[in-house]
Image 1 (cartoon, rainbow, N blue to C red):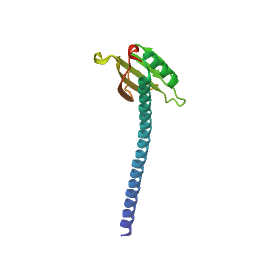
Image 2: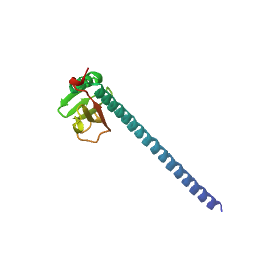
Image 3: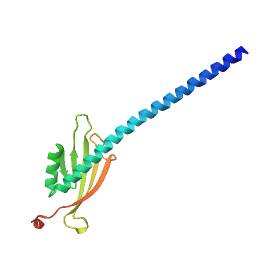
Image 4: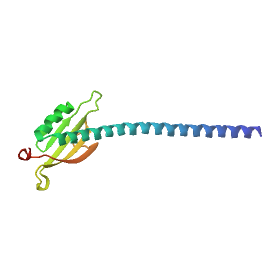
Length: 149
C-alpha cells in the first residue's frame, strides 16, 4: 500500500513539473514574439512618418527641382533624381535609415499641374526590388509659372 502511494506521488510530481515547464515555455515564447512584433511596429510607424514627410515636402515644392532640393536639405540625405524615380537614402546612427523611392506622374489624365506620386519606404539595407515597409499614394497640384500671380 505504501509502495502505491509513492508511485502515485512520483507520477503526480512528474506531471506537475512537466505542466510547469510547458507553461514556462509558452509564456517565454509569447514574450519573445511580442518583442519582435513591437520592433516591427516601431519600424512601420517610422516608415509611415517618413512617407508622410516626403509627401508634405512634395506638396510644398513648387516644381521637381525644388522638391529634390527640399528633400536633400530637409532630410540631410543622399538624393538622386533618375528621371521618373527620385531616390532618397536617409541614414541613422543605429543603422535604422530608410531608402525612399518616389515615382511621379505629372499632368495626370491631361490635367495640367496635377502630379500623382507613389512613395515607397524600405529599410536602407533592403535588397533592391524587395517589398516596401510602407507605400503611400498621393497627389498634389503644382501651378505652372504662367498661372502664378
